[in-house]
Length: 475
Image (cartoon, rainbow, N blue to C red):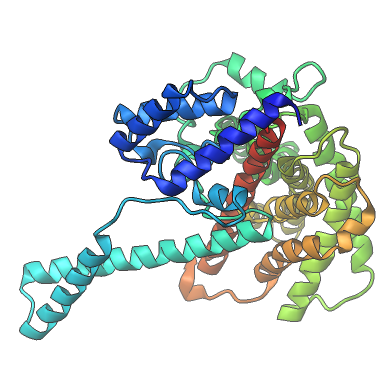
C-alpha cells in the first residue's frame, strides 16, 4: 500500500468513527469536528478533503437529508456523511451511525390511542374524514414497507445490501425538457474506441434517460402514417411496414432506454443493433430447437413453466455468447443491455409473426388488435425477462473469466428463476375478464410493475458496482 493510500485509509477510518460517536447532522457538531480537524492541519487525502467540504456545508445549514453518502455516492446518507449499508460494510457491522433522537414513535402511539377512543364515543363527519385519511396513509405506508422489503431482498440476492432508492422521478424528469440534435448524437456515438469514457469519467448519478421517448414518437408516427395509407388506399404494400413498426416501436424504444442507462458507455449503438438483429433471430432458432423436445406447453401452470424455461434458456445462451465476447471489464449494466437487445429482437420477430398469423386468419382488424395488445404488454415481455437474465449472468460471473458453467451456478440460477417464473406467469391461463382493462388482464399489468421494480433494483446495483470499484481504486 502506498503512502497516499495509507493516508486515505486512515481518513476513512476517522470519518466512520466520528459518525458512530457524534450526531453529524447537527450543524454545531459538524462545525466542532471541522474546527478540530483544521486545528490538526485537516485531512489531506482527496477523500478526506471531500469530508471536510461536507462538514462545512452541514455547518452552514445544508440539510443532512439532501446529502449523498460519501462512500457509495448513491444512497442517501443518514447523517449527511455515510449511509447505513456503507457503515456496516466498512466496519464489518461493528459500528453504527449515531442519530438524533426522534419523538415520532410517541406521536404515532398517541394517534393510535386517540383513534381507539374516538371509536368508542362515535365519529363526527370531520373525524370520519380524518380517520379515512389515516387509513389511507397507513395503507400507503404498508405498501411502501412491503416494496422496501422486497427491493432489499432482491438487492441482497444480487450482492448488494441495505435499502434501495428507486428514484422513479429521475427516470422521467428529463423527457419533457428540450434536447438538441447534438445531444442525441452524443448519446448515439458512445461506445467506440474513441468515445468510450475512461473509468474515472463514468457517471454514477441515477440515470435520467430521455432519448427513448423520441425514438418511440418517431416509430409511432411512421406507424400511423402507414396505417393511414392502408386505410385510405387499401394497398397491401403498406401491410409489411405496419406489421414491423407495430411490433417494433415499443421494444426498440425500451432498448434505447437500456442503452441510455448503460452508465459505462462502453457498448456502441452498432453493437446493440447487431445483437438485436442477430441475437434476436438466433434466440428464436435456439428456442425452436428446445421446443422440439416436446414438453407440455398447454395452459396449465406446469406447461407455462415449461414455456418460460425453454424460451428463457434459448435466449440466455445467446446473451452469454455476446457477453463472452466483451473485451475488458464486464459491468452489470452491460449484461442488462445485452439481455435487453436479445429480448427485444426475439419480441419484435415473435410479435410480427403473430400479427401476420392473425392477418391471414382474421383480417386487418384482428391483426391491429394483436399489435395493440402486444405493444401494451411489451414493457413486461421478452425484453424485460432477458434483461433480468442478462443482469443475473454478469452478477454470477463477477470479475472472473467467462466460463459456460456459470449458467449452472447457484447464484445465476436463483436470479434466473425470476425471468422464468415471471414469463410462466404471463403464459399461465389466469385471465379474469372482470379484472381486464382494455382487454388486458390487471394481473399482467401488476406483473409488469414487479418486473420493473426488480429491474430498477438491478440498475441501482449496477451503479453501486461502479461506485464500489471507484472506492477500491481510490483506497
